[in-house]
Structures are given as structure tokens and as C-alpha cells.
Length: 61
Image (tube, rainbow, N blue to C red):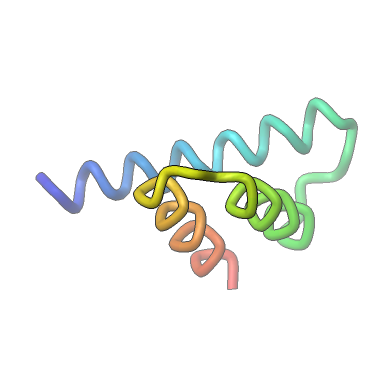
């Protein structure tokens, strides 16, 4: 169950980043995703969500 929840949280983090990029009218690319994820991680106060952003960024590499 932990793996399934983790996967959902990472997918949610990536989805939020894609939505942010699209709303700004930018191209959805690995670079823009990584930049957006980094920005979100820097502002995140919740350690668990921060970890999900980090994991999602690693998937882009």
C-alpha cells in the first residue's frame, strides 16, 4: 500500500507542475518540469511533500 500511495503522491506533484507550466503558456519539457518542481520544493514546508517533489525530479533525470 505504501508504494501505491507514494506513486500517487509523486504523480500528483508532477501533475501540479504540468498544470503550472501550461497555465503560464510554457512548453512542457523536462527542463521546465524540473525548474517548476525545484521552485515548488523550495517553497514547500511539508517534509513529506518536499520528498515527493524530490522523487519526482529524480524521475525526470
